[in-house]
Image 1 (cartoon, rainbow, N blue to C red):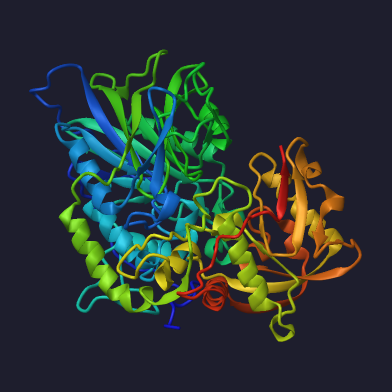
Image 2 (image 1 turned 180 degrees about the vertical axis):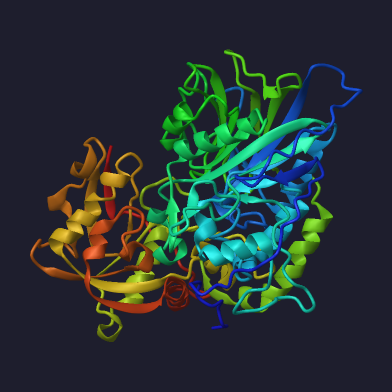
Length: 607
């Protein structure tokens, strides 16, 4: 097998340099929290009236998907006038660039912002090069500002600083001869992430966009629970604070500096009642069609903030949620992977310097499909070609064969065919006595980043799984662990899928063959796990017996709301999850006998 990228970890050197903040629509001025107000630009003498419409273009959760995502991960659902739904292929930086550039035409006042997770959990073409290709693409897209998301911390603080400031990778050096990575032209905002020792934000908490006297402040935060969903190494030495308190604090500071129009970029999200990107979230009243953490956050953020750009849940919505004064305010999210962008109109009052928000509607916002019928942006085609050429020796090697799509990320089911394949691969890799003696394997659903598509993504041929495609499914290169758990601890871990931190939004682990149980969704909390139904190879789990369990180091450390796994004993560290996955594909498929998608029938669901 070709050499894979080094495992991500600590020891990143803090790069130096200053990001130049330039954009086609205007200039973003970085505002230090303690800095003096820089004052307003001179008003436009030829302005047509008291108000001006500012176009806010936004997207979120790109995750380095510069090429169109494969399978169902690369589609969006659209509800038609007659109530039926249509699936539209979407996404890809070549099309996103065209969409944004066309959207900006005719809009003198246009600013482009993002809601975090621009990088991390990326396909091989970006991930192999520590996401330098994605930052380069975002610079070309004229992104003005983004908040950090949890995945910006996957490789730790020093690597995030390098993304912002530039410099070659401390271990792997520069990837292209004579070229030093320049870093992001846009500011990454991390208002609620502070250094444990100094208490100061690790990056700028906010920035101000200015154009012809119009000033809009942007505050960026990631979800407070970031440490629960990122490896301990990635968040070492950092403290994550309450989103609402942080935004309210900096909104006050911006107002003191004379910035009255404020947008919050929040890497936390909601769950709309419909998967269609054009669903009317406000049918029945402001925010009636959305649930999840963002709703409480939106209800409590100061009315000083005029619009919320959100993310993290990979859902599409344009809603209004009432602020503490009772006035509706837009809350938007553009799904993920560059499949959509949001176009929001903010009406700016030149006299007050604030956004006009009425009791009827905070602002007009709509999501638009980044369809693949439009022309490709030539500069993005060139960028993708350049990096693909560098990645090709690793990316194009066949590692397996499939007879049909094996759905993972694109499936809405609790148990997915690809989840079963991954768990089986982990069990097989770690079941030999000298490799850990695993009897059961668990895979967290959030670690499955794509589908295995039957249709060829390049010239490899239909049904061929390349190393690049396998990497896209399992991009974290987490090391596998095998631990001792008692049957009682095992049951507790299964209950934590649907209780505690995961009660409101269950995280159902993918399980290896032989483990079966019933999930009763008519019940609540941990009662959803039917305890006496949990069996291994047909035998009931014995609470007093010890079982050897394989799982990646992230959930073994309690990540994703599974503290029970931290109680495991006799830990053995094995191969990486990606190595286990590719080895399984190689052993269980060939050109003449491809792998069939499993039935995904290990968990019985009662609704």
